[in-house]
Length: 282
Image (cartoon, rainbow, N blue to C red; front, side):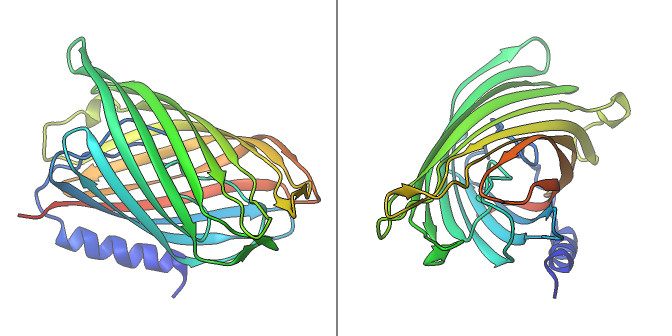
């Protein structure tokens, strides 16, 4: 079964099982955001991603993430890849999930929240985490674990959503090799048209424009750089549909700027689809 087909199978199963729980703790597809799950809330995400390169490269990944709301402002998450294909250089596509074959754990804490006007709020969230590789080598480089940290701040109301954030992922040495660290900045603007601002229990559809900018350092072999650093800026439209206990979101990003070294192919677009199911264990 292809990764894309698996996404639709999982989506169908979630829609069939959806209860009347209100979806919470969900932000945009690619960028950093501030929402966290409510206390005692759980979410199960199934994400499919694809990148398209110059030479018909089409690396894809199917990844599962489970999140839990410890308190109203503290959320724990863990993700693991189910299937992946190779191709193109390293890149961080989605802020909430690594794009590599590695187990990832994250703790997000919303440390600031205040009401702004009628129905609006301004929030800030910080996250820290770590990854452990599921492969000994990645593109010929010994793959080690990593540590990561990010911060996001923004404003959300019934009609408008604005988030900006940044994060860093630093890999540790393994057998004198080290994967290149990543610095990621994102910006998101979202809008919910008046006809979609309905009462609770109705489908909730939101549209976003997202931008990501990544500076990826060169890998090292035996302490020497191999010359495969890259910088990129991607921009594109995404959308999020929430209904009862299910969230479905997806979108595409196109390159606005790319600089790659070491003969690595440039990218034509990035696609991501994520299906979420929110639930509470009693």
